[in-house]
Length: 378
Image (tube, rainbow, N blue to C red):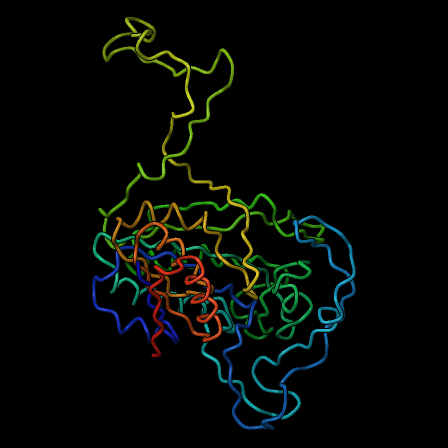
């Protein structure tokens, strides 16, 4: 199976794809306001300036490699992490030029960009195609970009609170208050629905080992949202491919219930011999809307990656074998990795050339001599 990697902003690279050409889209856009993916350039100022402000000081971490708290000291690199300037460099006056999605000044502007991206996705998606959209959420703050919880915390260090950094004057206009949960997934899903998508399912991705949190006035986030959206009321969906093991009580009560024939009172003329029996290990049921999938870190990536186990049911249900799966936010290439393993072709859009190289190496290492990966500049 093959993978094409389109280098550049997905709002531009998607235009190179023909109408109705992909069977399924599985993607996870960047969090709003949390992570800088390193694609900015600077206009004016001092070309030798690093465009970073004061260092962030933090001396211990609550996160170990197994996801449990440790309180061990951080490395000197993470103890002192300089904050990048968000719009204008405070040292040399250069202006930041960056179109990456996720760094918009307000949630409304982020949602508007999401609508623009997925309007183009809808064009390239087949009429019977499906879009599986994973979105994470964050909290409101008006600090500087890369501040107390938006710098190393967003990169996997301390997780005091996932805080999106919204300037105070913009925050007031949007009605947001400090510590507000932004509800980015819900806002985006409703906006896409208003733009013409069918919103067919709301799936909870339950994370059994979430990042620990020291916040004391709310619960620790242990889930993200996964939405199923379509272009039409009828679409390709192979429910048999993602059936899950039936969950019935163990022991003597581990039996299938039985029903009486139509027109009979409950319990009368029921075919007990044919329907009341112990449930074996092969019994399955329709897949439920809460998916428990632990995180699956990829050591070469410097950012959060999709767990393959989250992507797999989306592709099995939404794309026929031999079809094409698209991820407009390709990242480390997890969507393509799973698609190729399941005998589907893949197309990735990726803004950062370094991440495209990471994805290429990962796909080639996984498929070996059978790897067919090509990268195309916009």
